[in-house]
Length: 303
Length: 77
Image 1 (tube, rainbow over the protein chains, first blue to last red):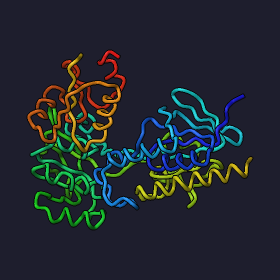
Image 2: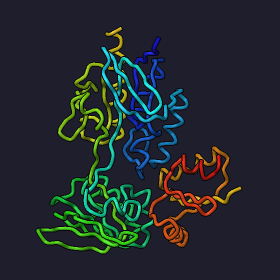
Image 3: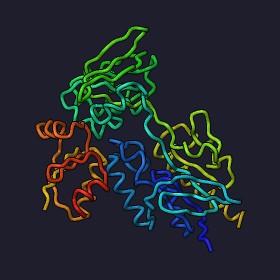
Image 4: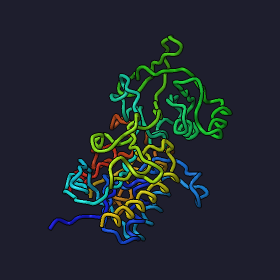
């Protein structure tokens, strides 16, 4: 007889880990499957807005989360999900190692950095181009850097780099910043930072390593000599392989209602991959909890 | 024992994960913080041609990123 799970959680960021913690405490028959432990919180510099925690770092937060999972007996299956299919009223989840049958699925697959899609971007990845300021930023010590984006992540990158880089150009595609006010204040009050509005990056230049960028501003093509390029222009949900399974919105987020319910009965979603469009730890935790509890209720109905 | 160096920064999450993983395996290594040791940072970029961390050097051979399979192979384990 095939082992049928009550739920399979896909992804181990805050949303998935919260769901798994509840599943474990409810003694459900479940697995949490992820390529690796940790989601977006792994690449956060500082965490300043999570309830109950005054101030911490992404790394410290990750360590606490790991301890909390150990305490609750949550063990992550380190496997890569290849596909999810409907089977009867349940689902089949296929990974690189095995096949799971389950009555419900909770999608907490998160998101990945959006690319500029300009020449030179792939060639110079890790050669001056990075999507993680706190990881590779310190290597640009004393150098001039360009940061692309106008939202929270871009301005957090500016804030992180202000004591490292010698000069920071912030290239914003639109005509205003859309980040939290306290971040905007920090950027505006720093004379190392030059904000360029209506600036569209068109190419990343270099030899062995990055040496500069080309961009367009009001129809005019311009160049900047920089050795670091930090791209923070938003995120794309990791939902590519699910487009035939479940309804996605125009930005490819899994559409959920206020209870984590998707267009497919038994399939729930939470966190950055879902249609909330507000990428916050507290929201991911709340939604992960909600999705698991609603899945548990759904199971009672189908039992 | 192979001579092992890890080039890292304190804020980089993958660096922390790599170092924890090595410690768990009982592998001894020299930790080089390239956010303060700028000479070492230069040396790392020159050797690997890559401006990213973590990088691990095992007997002169550099592996970029936390690539468990490649690292295990280089460690001969």
